[in-house]
Image (cartoon, rainbow, N blue to C red; front, side):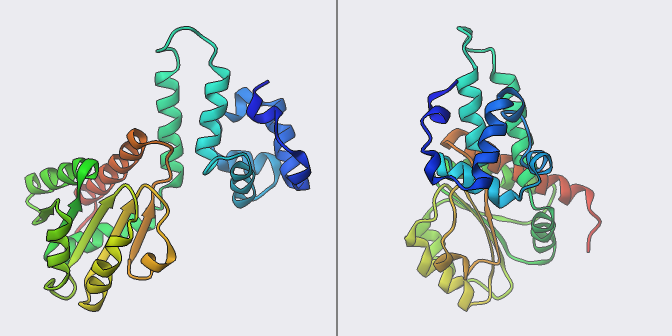
Length: 240
């Protein structure tokens, strides 16, 4: 049995939490590869109940909780033994959190709004540049931005009904004045962020998306997955 489950203060757990904990303890190998929807169906509890339980154990969500279970379960000396199973499970986790309606709305904006801008700096510039390169080969007009100063300048001159896709690791407060200017000028903003976007910023964002992953590498994998889905939708959906 793994310490992070053994050392839980059960006095802080609700009846539902204790039921979830008991099931996890009795079905560790099964749970560490399950989708959250399957666990909800198994226990007749809500998605929110599972997430709250995971947060009480120090995890940001169910995906991070499962990663802890997998890490504890992997006692092999082979450092490569679990790479492919874990990556497959994380792909399932990412797909389970995708809100298809939001991605379809992004595609609609890309096809109908001009100009269309893609912003990403530092490590977020990698998926941003990938999207720009692919869309350019598909003859879809777009403009790449990778400096926040350029983004700030654009926010003061951007035409109404322009669309801008922002990719970042964290929702820093330095974006607030930029988002306010975009909102004031009537631009449409989608923000794909690897950390939760606070309410004071989401009020200026038309489509906020939180990728909800556990480390920098997998944050970018999640973002790449969303970008690839958007690209595939663009190439397969009929023009509106």
